Image (cartoon, rainbow, N blue to C red; front, top):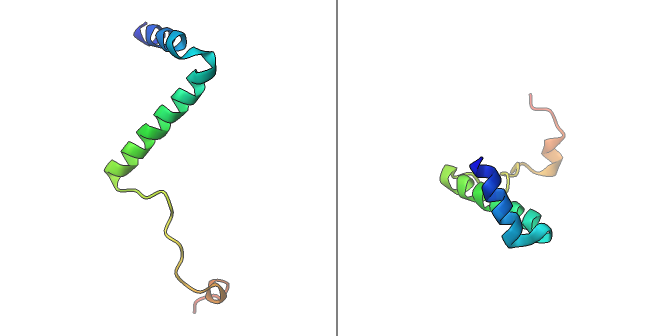
Length: 59
């Protein structure tokens, strides 16, 4: 019930055009916060082997 009230208030305050953008930015901020707490980076660590070695099988 409380969630519905909060959503209605957000719809009235932000309007139907800005509400999706506000939700998106809120979700992105929460995701960045959780990632910073866990120490996870946005960019994956690249394989450091040269490109010629990537295609070869290791014996």
